[in-house]
Image (cartoon, rainbow, N blue to C red; front, side, top):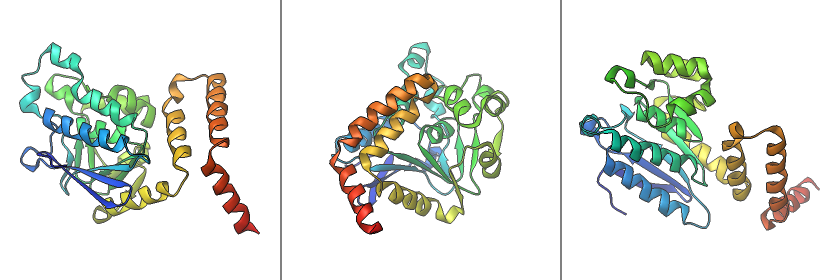
Length: 252
């Protein structure tokens, strides 16, 4: 598949790297980028075993947010179309695993894209922020409900209401970072993490992600019911039987 605003590679079988490539616009997301990333999600979702998708940028900018050239002219009807928000919802609910490999600036929609992913492998010179209030708008692609779940309400209010930019160390202390690595190892670290996940039971990983994504919506009773129902399916899966048999044979 060929694209105008992203580059897609598969450096290792089952691991897809989707790199936003709009350097002249600091990797800002326009509608073309949204459409192209959606096509990667669709292609990946149709595989029998969903690949891990790694989202990346360049060494200076991960994603700088929505393209202000488009954003300035959008009206109330465009807001209700949920352009970036809809894409990030699709990423969050992709059945496979997603990883943000962040170097440089991840601002606005870039920070929200990182928050949408299951993991964030972050370089030490990375920077995060939600500067929308300084432009007279608010975050519109998930920061107001994803950031509180990840870093807590107090930290989320601090970032969103001040618009300040934080470094990787502070983001790590807040609990936003999954792996903090040297900038030169960000993509390598993301691929290593993806390979670890790929070695697990793929159906078990997908179901576990589904349950974890619902945690804020569930009571303990509902959570128990969901876990036992999913476990019932996994108990009958051939992969479970094979993996447990292999484990017992190695133990002998």
